[in-house]
Image 1: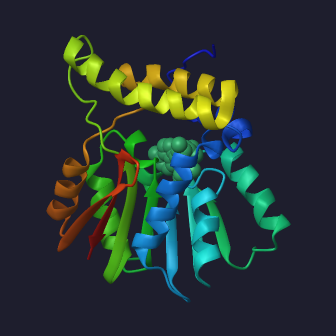
Image 2: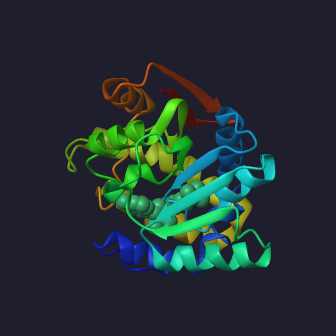
Length: 241
Ligand SMILES: C[S@@+](CC[C@H](N)C(=O)[O-])C[C@H]1O[C@@H](n2cnc3c(N)ncnc32)[C@H](O)[C@@H]1O
């Protein structure tokens, strides 16, 4: 099994080369991304921000759906490198702009985006409140923040056995899916990732209701949550400015 490091950026650098062959193979992940795109109601000419874009799986689905433009940010140079190769290959350079930037350091103009989306990325941010406030600021009036995340609260004391059982119940379903859809390679990656959830080592999940509250506190006027059909422990939140 791979070594768990304390440096999250290093972890993603190392994962990047096999991302599309591991999580990228899991059907549940694609169902989540598809629901995010559907719920965003993206249309032609929309400017979309994809936070924690990874290898670009979500951004490319947005561009499949509508003639929009995408700004995609991620902290990992390796993830962005793989995404840039895809962009070159499908000649999308004019439609996608990739920037190496962290969610915590976003400095976009107020009201710049129609849609801001993030899938399984923002739970890596420990201090979420300022990031959600910044997302609110960067959206146009009427714009939508669309979040695809696991609906699990992993906060609490690391030595609390009930917390451990709660996380293991989530992980067991994910391990089964990883093995089914991506084989041993995907399972191994998700298995290693599980330890990070248990130890709060770069994985700081909160329940979807807690995300919705953060959005309302930041000023969003409406929040709606939809479960991913068949995989209800993943949900999509739409918060409208
Ligand atoms: C599990 S991947 C998700 C990638 C993509 N959104 C998807 O759904 O396939 C998480 C991504 O978030 C990025 N990430 C982690 N912490 C971040 C942060 N603070 N700011 C921006 N990106 C971050 C990682 O580098 C990684 O590419």
